[in-house]
Image (spheres, rainbow, N blue to C red):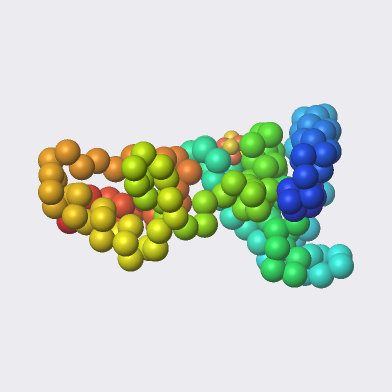
Length: 163
Ligand code: SF4
């Protein structure tokens, strides 16, 4: 299990997290990934609740148990019940919760104006995308990723084939 704090606490907490993560990975290798795991979707100590999720960092599809407390992800561990990774996570997998709270995480669409990216509304962004697709449909493409979920991939395929 890996716990971490919000990275708003600065670079030193990020460094500390990375050090702890490296130790956790090393420990996981030494124990063959058989880290004790709390039952999924159940309340753990101190109000921690564990939920199952896929890791979002690559297309391997490792199972992750996400520890949630007070509406925030505070811990991550590999899911020993997952046939893909059997409790193991790579270094990126241990970061998957931390990525939610990065200071540089995009929270709004960006539109390039005069060579500079500026925040805009979803309405304006979607309207702009639709206009650009209609202007030149044959030059439109979608860049997919192994990071998307099955539901997201399904929606994109429907959009590309049907739209
Ligand atoms: S834990 Fe590592 S290998 Fe597994 S899905 Fe995440 S990034 Fe990929």
